[in-house]
Image (cartoon, rainbow, N blue to C red; front, side):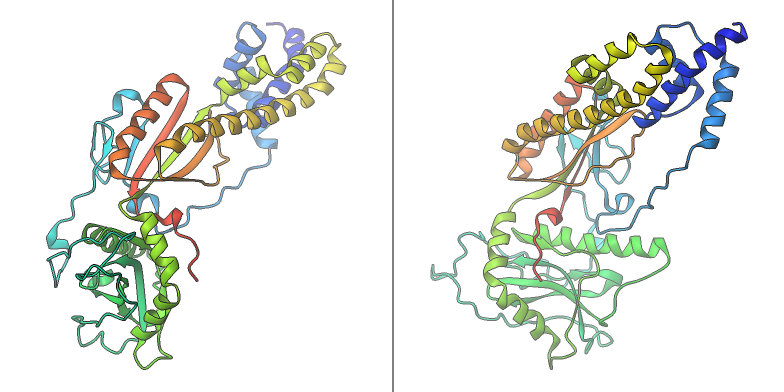
Length: 414
């Protein structure tokens, strides 16, 4: 290709890179050449020419800063139990050894080895219906504190802090081993109770990631065992510690807290009874959305036609405006797709909560939806079938994780 012809195409090529960057597309020589051929229906450019241009583009471009992953009670590699849909053929396969096995789209609960849990009392009590809990006489229980009996090691006795794992229904006899093997027991008020262990009134902190991950797993293990023991548990986030040093008996501080919030907690336990949380993340092909809005959006079509009739100098000024309109239309179309999916999922679940959507585009996939759903176990297969069909019909990538304790559906109880 003669030098004159190369420089004649330089303006259009720079605009193409600018538009790709504004849409969040990956800027590589291969991608630029591919988009050049698709967009302008021109023969391929010399590879060396594209590589040099991309090199200087990256050198002059301001680097993006991305925040680091923060550990939470649901940290990905610590507690994530997921079934993913990278390909439809992989629908009934697990992603990793930690993932929960999938059968016909149904996420099964993990097996907890008894050797990993020290139990003082192994006989579970009969589960209580939170919406209709009655005593043996058929009457609703009076809000009277239940006596506490607990097996506490001598070195643990007298600690003023109470680490709270969750609030449970009908679990006054629940016992297991908690963080660092500390004995877990229940502080009860009427038919609800706080699942706790004794500790100093100090946060669990460590600079060692492995140690934090261990604590998170142990926190989750206690909640998993509590869910097996009783019909409903309100989970608390990691490191929820109550300082009871102001009372003669630190348990009384939590007992009073339960008493003051009894009605709210009882209602929440009823809402969560027999249900689990699942996470759903959906991303869509950016190329597909961009092509769609370019063909369907009247403003973009009109401006594209105007630019085609302009001379090069004038057209260059309007191409930046076109890129902005395309980016705006892509965002609006993504939100519309997400809303449409939510409308279809809502009848399948007990509750749904939309979370903040990631902004980073990876492998030309634009995140459009991040939600948590609350559902009964017998609905999981139905949800999985819906997501499988959704991926088959459209250019979507879907991640379906769970089951989790219902963190997303627990309101502030302070």
